[in-house]
Image (cartoon, rainbow, N blue to C red; front, side, top):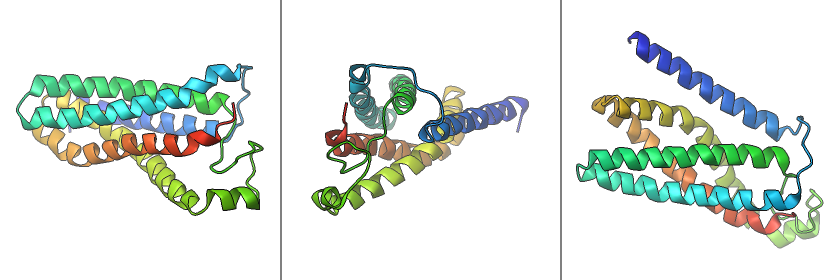
Length: 192
């Protein structure tokens, strides 16, 4: 491993740990929130779903391009997917910092699920939580894979890039698709 690779691995590890810690800290709701009108928050979850949905499509298009030998278009498409995923991350962090917590099935918006609300949500709650948990775990794990895949691809280290992308592509695609599904399932319970 050369000096450049060592730097990149350290950089990727640092960025990944930083993003993970920011998300964990925000989920703990310990940072003070500025007063933001709820209307300013309303569009962020929908925007996140749009970013995720667009990334899903771009990843599939990217696969098409590389399978047909269109390397330049493959690169451009992946760069656009990467930019949109980065914008998603910023929007996601902002929303989870500023917005009140939303619980699946919380019809009255009080932050608690009573027996009636649990019954109304039914067993679909478990489906939602399975999708959400796998989405969160894989989203946390795919960031370093995405960053390393980009580095290898941009450096034209094709074999190393291919080995990484065998894992990165399906995980990234799953995360973007399930991001849209999570939004569709939780959106009826947003109370702002």
